Length: 250
Image (cartoon, rainbow, N blue to C red; front, top):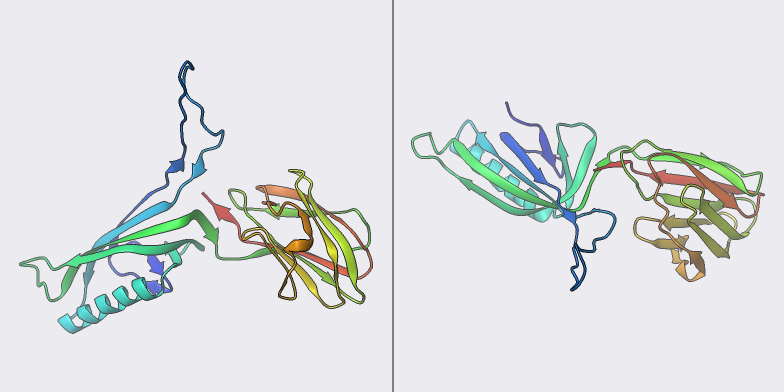
């Protein structure tokens, strides 16, 4: 029975084997006159590699040729894209590093091809296809605790959006109540504008304009699995705060 696999929206026919490797980046340093070695306390994840193999069967040689051509084109031209397994609503961000196929002698080679595909997921996490969000409209107190529940299996970086409604907003701060990390934006968000803080790519913009020069603190605000108490401090008249994230898994 074939395994259900998609890449860049294309169903890959005939996958019979999926194998993957998720190494940890652990570097040991040894020193003279010291027992053992020194390593970092966390086993940081390296790139994930995935190898697919199988056999594709088509009704005639033209259909087989066209399928292999389409597959090769998709693997190459789409570059880094979503790779999903068994349609379980999760995907890897992966890029093809190798693709080979062969026709087996004595087995109607015009109709059957055996193949192998290698992928590299430089971002090693599985992501949920459904975005989660928590919107707090028109905050009324400062500080205000906003509970953000991450139902994923590991930490994930959110997009934090602070929108000024009827009037301009100046000097806002978000603190992660679980980790103690915080960032402060000392600039002004004009009425109708939004400060967008991307904790994945460490970017901050106000209506498309760079705002990092007015950010202090850290943008390393990963949501822990479970409930996270995010604390807003700033003006309390006409402010919307939205947390948006993709649950992810190891």
